[in-house]
Image (cartoon, rainbow, N blue to C red; front, top):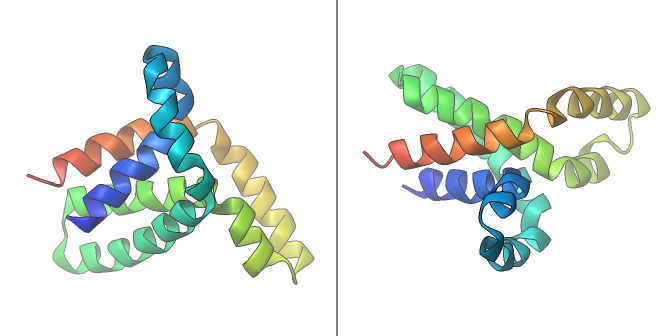
Length: 124
């Protein structure tokens, strides 16, 4: 259940531009979550890796999908912190991380929507 809640919050932040375009009064809620975007992203990324490991053992397709999307969205949201604390010392890793982020950025909103849906589905 905690994974589902984290997934939904991360999905809302990742898809915030689309959500605000469709529902402008959601801006206030998203503004409250935005300062924590980096930390939520880091938690999602690590939670996604852990979830993939666990889900492979149980072969849960929704679990694997949820964890994979959590990792992708977590990486995108938490890239600033990940880069600052993990990639700072290695220039090659920093460049590779930035390249990967640039490739994945166009998928942030769709991945956020998918993460919200998978988070809701994981309650059932």
